[in-house]
View (cartoon, rainbow, N blue to C red):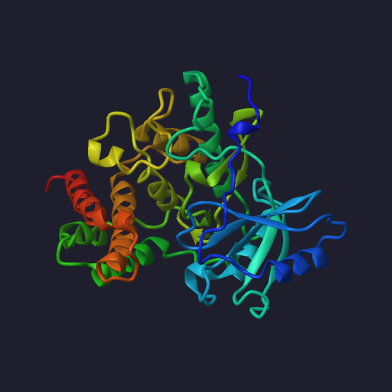
Length: 356
């Protein structure tokens, strides 16, 4: 199919409140990249509820800048140094990571840490493919396969050889996740959502041992991959590594499948779809599991625990966002109905629970 740059993912104007000292940042970039021409121009990518992503354009080069929102200190989801180091160490063994350019730990520059990395020019598949792009069923199948293959390739990385043994605690990951997400839900619960007691109890009582320890992405979705504009079935990059750690690969797959909405799923799931897994040619969730397990050398087994875990984790994430809205910590009207999704996810999890 013919493609041109109209399908490329593009940044827009910087949102009000997300501005920074462009003069200081331009000086920082020039100090690490010689030969840059022209004034630096700044645009911002949409999304970024956690960390913010900007495009820095010079006359002869473009880069990406990642930084937390203003006023945020380096901790948990905003640790720019950790994210930078993870990507830098992964790049030699997992080439889909953008090349890292420089990390700024000096918060006096813009008030918080940030880093600069290579800009990958390509297509990012969001809830739908870019308007006007029509992929055949065979192309969609190839795209689907290629995206899953990138997760498999990540899970096969030798993390010891890559110097990533300090990325996470490793063994015991399943137990830590069930305990941690259960605690987070209890703390974020509001009066208009279910208590998830039956789901949390079942997960706690049916935890399998970790099947392996590997590098896991933590948020591996279609909207975190970059596609080749000349061949949109080909993956050229994987983005958003802030949740990467050492853990159980099947838990990572469970996380991903929580976002995998199929064409015939209930309307409540269709309303939450964030990636084009509904297109003709996409694998079903069950097909993804079979394909993944065959590639990893795992015998076929009942995936119910990991599916329920992924959906429960998604419910906690949605509820944490709603909690902020409920308590006036954000006034984004989009978040006002998130409790309805939490209610539905509880019903969905309970439907998946094996009958006693």
